[in-house]
Image 1 (tube, rainbow, N blue to C red):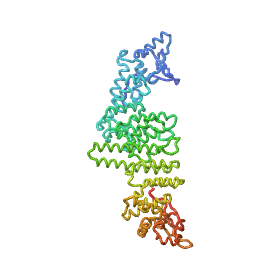
Image 2: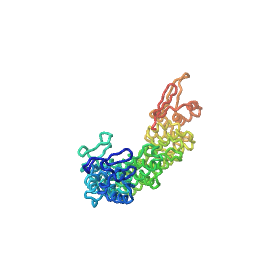
Image 3: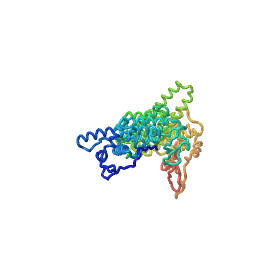
Image 4: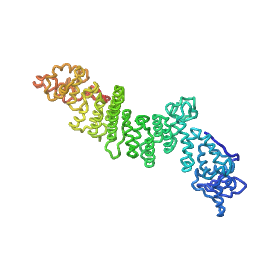
Amino acid sequence: MKYMKLGSKPDAFQSDGRNIRFFVSELPADVFVHVDEVRFHLHKFPLLSKSRRLLGLVTQACDDNKDEIFLHDFPGGSKAFEVCAKFCYGMVVTLSAHNVAAARCAAEYLEMTEDVDKGNLIYKIEVFLNTSILQSWKDSIIALQTTKLLLPWSEELNLVERCIKCIASKTSTDPSNVSWSYTCNRKWTASDSLVEIEQGTHEIPPDWWIEDICELDVELYKRVMIAVKSKGRMSSKIIGEALKFYTFRWLPDSYDALVADDYMRKNRILVETIISLLPSDKCGGSLCRFLLKLLKVVILVGGNGPMKEELIDRISMQLHKASVKDLLVPAKSDGNTIYDVNLVQCLVSKSLMQVNTENDIGFDKSDNAFVEIASRNKVLLALGRLVDGYLAEIAHDPNLYISSFIDIAKTVPEEARPSHDGLYTAIDIYLKDHPDLTKEEKKMICALMDVKKFSSEASIHAAQNEQLPLRMVVQVLFFEHLKISGGMPTTTDDISMCQATMDGDCEGRIVDHHNILKHQMENLSIKADEYQNGEGKKIVKTRSTRIFDKLWIDKGQRETGKKSETSRSSQSTPTFVKRGEEKTTGSSRNTKHSIS
C-alpha cells in the first residue's frame, strides 16, 4: 500500500474524552469548530491561511460576536476534518488509500485551493492520487470502496469514475504483464487461506482480478463490471466466472438468511444486478448450475417477472449441462408439491425447442450435417437422462399427481431415451410411494415404458415387480425371451402376441418354446427356490413363475384339473426384493436384483 506524509511537526492534537479535540499550545483557542458530535478547539490564524471557507465562516461569526462554527454534512466526518486541521498547523499527516478520498472531499469542502496558498492540500492530494493510488491495483480498489460514504462529493470530484477507469484498465492487462500483487483463494492455490501472489511465483490466470473486486459494494461492483465489459477484451466465460464468484461471496447459504426480512431486499438487489450483468452471449460464460441457483434465489426473494423469464431463457439453452440436484427448485409456500415441477417442465420444453431451432439453422448453414446431428443427439440424450433422474427424485413426493408425473415424462421425445431403465426406476419408485393408485392409473403410468428398451437387469427386476400390472410383467418376460433368442418382434402383430396371452387365445403359438423358456428363466434367475419344512418340500414361486406355468403348461393337463399347483403358487411370496433389501422365507434368504 502506498503512503504519503505531509508536514513535519509532531502531532499535538489531544482529546479530553468528552468528544473534544484540542491543539496543545500555550495560546488559548479562539475558534471552536463543530463537526458531527466532535468539538474542535482551534486557532484562527493557521486555519484561515489555508481555507477560504473557514475564512468566510469565521469572519461572519466575528461579526455576530460568536466563536462557534458548525460544519454540517461534512464529507468524511470529524476524522477527515482533523486531517485538514493538522495540515493547516503543519503537523505530520499520513495519507493512504483508506483516507485519501475523504481528505480530498474535505479539502474541497474547505476550499483549500492553490489561490489561497501555494502547495495547498488539494494540490498535494491530487499529486498523490495520480502518481500512486490510481497506479496501484489494490489501492485503487480500496479508494473506490471508501467513496461510497462520500457521496455526492466523490461523484462531483470524479473520484469514483477515475478509480473505476483505473481498475477496468488493469483487468484487461495481459496476464504475462501483471507485475502487482493480487488476491487468490481458488483451486490453484496451495491452501484455502487468502494469499498474496507475486509475479514469477505462479502462472497468472486470465481471471486473476475477480477476487479482489468482490469486496466492492454491489453498486460499485456493477459499475466496474460494466466498464470491464465495455472494453471488449474480456471473454464471456471470464465475465461469467467473475459474476459467479461475487454471487457466492455475498449470497447467504442458508434459506432463513436468504428470506429474512432484513436481508431479502438486499439479496433481491444482488441477484437482479448479477442477472443484468450476464454476458449477452447466452450460450457462454455462465454455467447452467450457477444460473439455476440464481433462479432459485429469484423465486425465493420475489424477483421481478422479466428477470425470471430472462433466466429461464438462458437456462434452457444449456439445460443439458445441469444435474438433478440443480433442478430441485423448492415450490412456493402455497404449492402442494415439494418441488416446482411446472417450472422444470417449462425449462425442458424450452430447451427442446431451442435444440430443434438450432438444428434447423445448422442444416441451413452448416456444411457438415453429421456434426450437427451428433451434437443434437448428444444434447437429447443428456436431457433424457436428466428428466428420468428428476422423475426418480420427485417420485417420492406423496402430493405429486400422476398427471404431473406423466406430463414431465412425455416432455422428452423417444429418441432421447434409447434405454428405459431410468424411466422404469422412476415409475417403480412412484408406484411404491403411491400405493393407493387404481389399476387404471397404474396402466396409465406404465404405458410410458417400452419393455423392448429394458436392459436385462431391468427386465429381471420388472419380471418380479409386484407393483406392475400383470400384462406388463408378461410383456417383459416375452420380450426378454425374444431378445435372448434373437427373435425380437418387428411388427405390431408380434408385439400384440404377448398381450393376447392374457386372454388365453394364443397359447398354441408358443407351446413349442416351453423348454426354451424354462431354460431362460434359469438364466434370468427367475427360477423358484425350494425350502424344507415339517410337511416335506414345497415350491415357493414368484408371480412371473406362476405366469409361465399358466401360459406354457400343456392345455390338456390344465383341463384334467391340475389346479393345485396354481392354487399353491398363488399363496407364494416374491423371491426377489430390491437391491440392498432382503426377504426371508423359511430358512432361506433370497436377494432381488434392482436398477433403482
